[in-house]
Length: 145
Image (cartoon, rainbow, N blue to C red; front, side, top):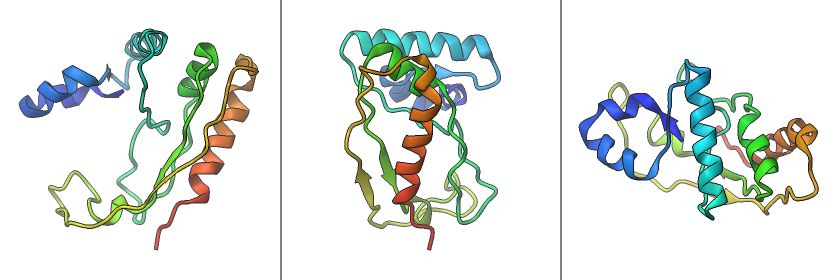
């Protein structure tokens, strides 16, 4: 899933239309349609990458992990698919903004892939605790210095 604004860039649009699900973050209907499509993709056996913060806060340097939204966790529970949390700890050091203001530089990003969290035994009421668990896991590996 990604922000619908990416469709405005002609180069990104080609890539984005083939593998991503656009969502207008200002529209609840767009979010509903995007999650419906994501659920359909999961039902077909596809994997999804979802950034549960829903956005990047470019105002804080170094960055802080934003509160997670419930949608991805509810989707995983509804579809009975495991969640594999991933911590990308220092990518912000190499590309802070979109590259226009501060530029980018080469480097090696540290990525930690956590053990899967299985959702088969969970019900919809567990989405908040699942969200909190994944947030703690990801934050446990974050490095801001």
